[in-house]
Length: 163
Image (cartoon, rainbow, N blue to C red; front, side):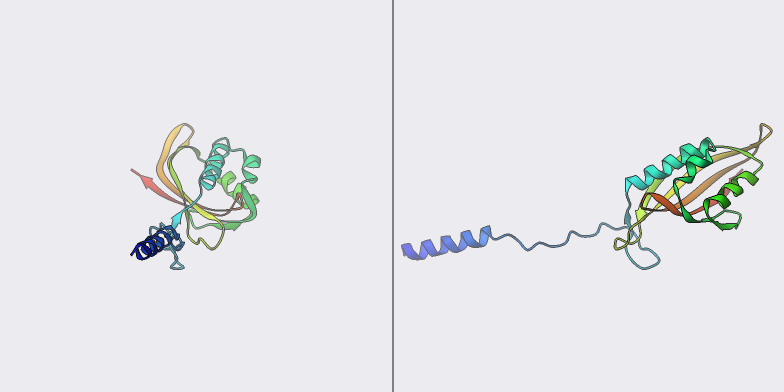
């Protein structure tokens, strides 16, 4: 009897002390990308990059802004213009005749493919455009930045005019 109790105790200890199989932690996703893969939260460093761009853009310091964009960055503008490279982006900004002020209302980063590097940052801005000191337009701007290895490789914006 004593041997049977000892055997039961030993078996219980062996089973109780055996680690559970390691399972992959579930992907905390919300939604899906065009590829069908889950969308997860991106990195804070990508959001910080967009915030740094905003600081330089407010000063219209194009040379400081240049370092944030890859040489082959593609740009898609709210008026339908599409171009590549920072010089084309700077030329687009130079053509605008309005003076702008804005406030970044929010920004967040998402990762649309955990198997590939890079994040998408989505940012929103309340904007006022003036000409000779008179308000010409108020708008809400939404921007998307694809950030890879500390630089923007794709940028797009949309503009919704407000009454």
